[in-house]
Amino acid sequence: MGYHHLALATRDMAAIHQFYEGILGFELVKVEMGPTPEGGSSKHFFYRMEDDSKFIAFWELHDVPGTENLETSLSKAAGVPRWVNHISFDVTDRDDLERRRQQWLDAGVDVVEIDHNWCHSIYANDPNGTMVEFCLTTGSFTEEDRKLALQALTQNDLADSKPPKLIGMHQAQAK
Image 1 (tube, one colour):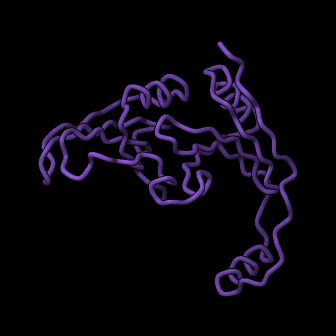
Image 2 (tube, rainbow, N blue to C red; image 1 turned 90 degrees about the vertical axis):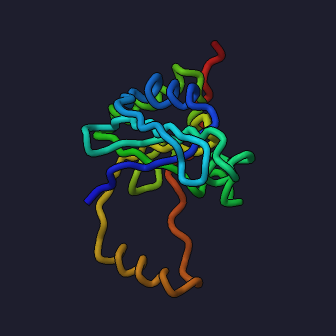
């Protein structure tokens, strides 16, 4: 079972549209508009990611009580470092990962790249300040991996994981 959509609030729908459709190529396919239960109104924009069962969606809120100081960065709102709360999208292969990295760089977006030893990821920040990841699984999971994960649920004295093979920064060229 997958998820149907992830919905996030934004203050700058034009910037979100440029990032998710203009750069990433997710297609804006639907908007729902109307009053909210608290007062004010909203627009709920849906971007198709693969097919009509997978979307990322954004709320644009207008005069909704309590949203005057809305923080749209998931990690900042939670009071944790930027890398903690993030959105990760899959890619089909290394060429797809490379294509996504180049999309960001061509759009003037800096990219962090990490080979985690079992998956290879690239990261950038969206206009909300939320970290977005494209990730390619490069390894497989063993029964030992599962045993260690289960142990980690109740133990804090386990050895650290093997460090990433690669941590790199790709800076976009100034336009």
